[in-house]
Image (cartoon, rainbow, N blue to C red):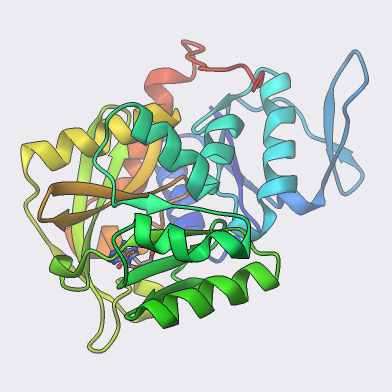
Length: 301
Ligand code: ADP
Ligand code: MG
């Protein structure tokens, strides 16, 4: 198969591993920088161009679209979908997952366990919002943050109020969430492919930090997840329409709660922690599904 990997940087671990796994399994892989793609969208014959060349046909595309380029990246991916190229994760599903509020609303509707979460727009409503969530401590998050940036723990009512006020003053969209203290600065990353959790790891925040992101100095270790955590992760990915997802779960007093679902989960942490060939499993999933034309939306979202 001809596989396009949409990534801005061919040197990234995840990108390199996907190229390696595809090549090893006899496919032709090419890394394409989405920001250098341009398109004729209104033509009766849709096309994608890159540096003066019209891209030929690809059998499958693996989107690895960074959070900072979601808007343009998903537009390029939609164009591949219009060309009837199989995509490992579809553009609509990526768009859903990138918006924390939208994805939590979708998960909530299907009864997935979540930390108590609220949002508001007007500064006048802040005090009541905090009361509604049971008071401090609260975690305040930017709706489109990633890698732990824009996630703040406020231990007191006053701190919560001023952080929310400050974000609102900057016109940033935020949500406020119950702080799951009992998780002890740890969360569980479940790597889902299709309807299976193919690998999982525990991420522990460094001392003095509550965010377990590996980018924030967290450390990864092996963990056995419960059947409930396993099915929660698979269901969460399915509800958002993602074939590949990193579902992050906190162990709370009221059972597993989903904190977020990542549409481009990194491979380095999970492959190193588990010694599993996750990139290979992603390519195998494409082999099983691309030719069958198993598309969820055909870019119609
Ligand atoms: P990002 O998209 O930036 O990774 P997350 O929502 O995953 O944002 O939050 C980053 C980290 O902060 C999580 O991995 C977790 O360790 C911690 N965290 C986030 N929300 C909560 C919460 N409600 N309770 C306890 N810890 C949390
Ligand atoms: Mg996260």
